[in-house]
Length: 421
Image (cartoon, rainbow, N blue to C red; front, side):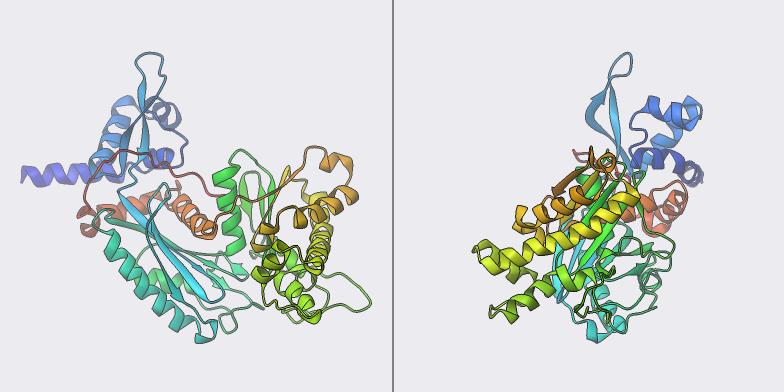
């Protein structure tokens, strides 16, 4: 009876530890003194709640230390071995999947074929079965499933977790992907556009101190993500940043995949450049083929890519004039061509924008990373799950019988969860 009473008391303390866990997970407070200052709780209460989190295996003291006015104190961190998130990036013909810990870093990963014509129900069932395999491979070392995130190559209504058309995923419109996944796995599920997730990864991983930036993905399609005030900006329905379908008037506007004429994408995307190269007698089907021809110094490919850079630069100059970012990062397959694309973008931005908007503006290439959308999905999921508004739900799941069965390892390493944009 006494053991049951002590266990119940421990669970009660753990259940009240949400604020402490959120402060640690988001990196807002990484020491005991910082927890005291920011929580406003008494030293005894902070100690009790922190000890409960450590005993549960959710938090640990790392080997790193920070000055404390006396003896250095150890840095507190989420225990990266406590659990994992499942993430998937749905591409054109394949789906990349992974289980990631809270750093985040990949625990296990896999790839499965994808055909959008199979429809959402069939694809999600296949995806869920592969997630089951990743769970089985991850549980022994990382017992608790925190949640899951899915990246889609299409406009997404983030609040509702569904695709909104027109898009390359024909027949997926309005299907409740997030709800389907929540029902299947019983954990928080997030669905987001791939460009926004690439933006989140680029921001958190490489430019965490930049408050206002634009990420432009130049690949098979054209899109952008916006970071404003340090957070991803989605707009009212999640359509913010869709620069690929801004239309330019001309005498003979090209037809876009969306069914309209004159879109930026129809002029500058990888598929559009490949189309124009094919008309000139070159073998090119996609953005990778374009980059291959550029690498071989093909004059027509170089000319078309530079022209594409100027088209992207034209729309980017409007974005700069409206949002006044301090940084533009250009990624995607076409960005692998380096300055051939970037020079065209810079030319138009600096030519069209006022000096005040471009005085401190940097325009750079993204750090190459094939899994940036996967990592962005992990950042996004962890940020919401550990947020002050959601962390109590996490602790309730963790304290349930299936959560209590989790092991309590505390290996070397750190695992603060950087705030997602």
